[in-house]
Length: 410
Image (cartoon, rainbow, N blue to C red):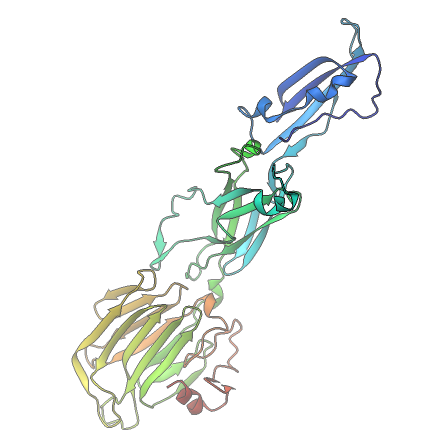
């Protein structure tokens, strides 16, 4: 059982008595009057002395004075120890993290974790104290949604939702890795959230850890999506293409093509090109789009078949949705306009022309998770709008010829 002990430096055994006083957070907790030198260890402060009133984290100190062993002897002045901070302490109580990046919160324990085992070699693997991490509902807007996505702030990287303080290595620093969640919104203000540490259960040897009270840790999440303000990949008839980095090119072939691909989901957007049918022999127009988000799929097409010589349009668009998880796709449909948001925050928008029945254009607004990960006819998204690698062939890497580049993504 961990105890706090008041050590008197420079005191030798003799015919003296001592008055010992204990304080927690400045409050008087315990006193031992007229204790002989040989009884000093009986002044130890145990959990039973303070457990019902005080909790870790706390400041513990003791005061001592000496007198002759005569009951009415005048005591010396009180000598107070330095405060001892007992508990679990973060290096800071405020951190800033950028969306898509992480920060390490360093936690330091100043009290041990108890353990009784027959085999000392098992101590490290069997004895530990779990410290759980959660977000208190300080912000009343926490449960709102934006862009069809949950308005999260941070994510944790740990074996469970918390950290472990081991019995044999409790004096070592513990790290909690906190990631900034990308909300998929451009020019959105920085968000602030809080994390709280708590103990839900303890062993009989660690009851001093019960009701651990660590002040909430403030996390500021800085917006990174603003780096991509105004960045769009577009395919508009007949068709003219613009990459994420702003490079424009023209490609008039027909068939099914990979417009966008990010394998981390995977997340794919395929488009169909067919003859526009207006006497423009070598033109082609958008007549279909398929969006895959992980294991879910959304498909819409306005053409019955793809042809080079003429157009073969459906009287009504054909739409199909295969959803394995409601979180894979957020679909907004107003009249003939569609907006699809995938979990990374990437947004796909398109509209169907009531006049021509073609899909007049497809736009993809990227998220920070597309940087250096996106590929296809949209090119490679870079932070600096570097267009030198936009024509990245599916197999050969960057090429200079737009046709061979586009052909590779058929």
